[in-house]
Each structure stands twice: as C-alpha cells, then as structure tokens.
Image (cartoon, rainbow, N blue to C red; front, side, top):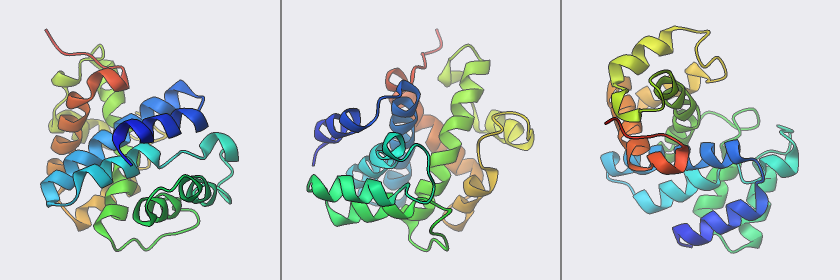
Length: 185
C-alpha cells in the first residue's frame, strides 16, 4: 500500500476534517521519528496516517477502537504489521508497549495536538515553534488539555523529549499544508 492508497482508504472511513488533520499530523511525526531511529519511515508514516481509521465507525467507543481499525485494514489487504500496530494503539485495551513503533505511536498521537496548539498561538506559523516552546507549554496542564502528557513522556524509552519535540516539529513543518499550518514569512 502506498501513501495515496492509504489516504483514499482513510477518506472513505473518516468524515471529520479535524480527524483527517490529526491523522496527517501523526503520520508526519511518525515518519520523522522512524527516520531518526533508522526504521522504515514509509511503514511508520502509514501507521500514523491510519491509526484512527475506525474512530467514526466506533463513535469513540474505546472498547472497539483499534479492533475495528484492524478489521477495516485487513479487509483491504493492509499488511499485518500496520494493521496490528493500529489495533494495539488503543492504550485503554492494550499497553505495556515494548516495540519502538508502538511507543512512538503513543507519543506521536498526543504530541501532534500539543504542537499544533503551540503553532496556533503563533498565528499558525509552525516554523516559529521550537522545542523550548513545546517544553514550556507541556508543563501548562490547561494548555491543550486533551493531550495525554504521560503518553508523550513514554517516548523517553527511545529518545529524549527535546529530540522528540524537534523531530515532531520538523515533520509538521514538512506537511504543514496537510495539517492547516503556514510558513512564517
């Protein structure tokens, strides 16, 4: 499966524009983290893109989220490695993540919203967001309150937070248009 096929499958299953933006943002972070770790960036990017493919179908029901995603993906011939990681990303059903890809997905799923919120404070200019900005806003519990900071911290099993923030910002800069952000002039 290539990126355009994955995007088409995602669009057929996800109606919410904000969820599509979130999926693209998570994919961008996953790609940069994979590159940094010497992993398969294409596969990790697809995992990030497809991780919430069942969210509309399940209506956010966390007893089904991920499981339905696995079904949708396997029915469409998506490789087991991708489908299994998508299934297991639901931290309310699974946990004790050992594989780097699973750890990265937990962190990327949450940090993407935090960094986009940081960019929106700066007029949507992602280029003006720095790891220092993210670190400061991370400590403000009321800022982007929906971002699970413990899931973001889980990345420390693979890399330090500052490196992770830098990679996440770089990924979002590369895909700024897909996530509704702009370049600083």
